[in-house]
Length: 61
Image: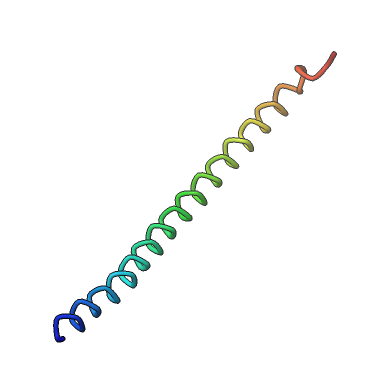
């Protein structure tokens, strides 16, 4: 009977450990996505600035 309790305790610890690993992974992913978003916004701003410098001649039909 002690084996059942011991096995049950290990099973209960495992989901909690996996949950924290999942949370850590989600936090890393969220950070990477934020960083990527900031990078893309900077690139878009740079493109906008360069198109304003040229006078936006490409839009004329």
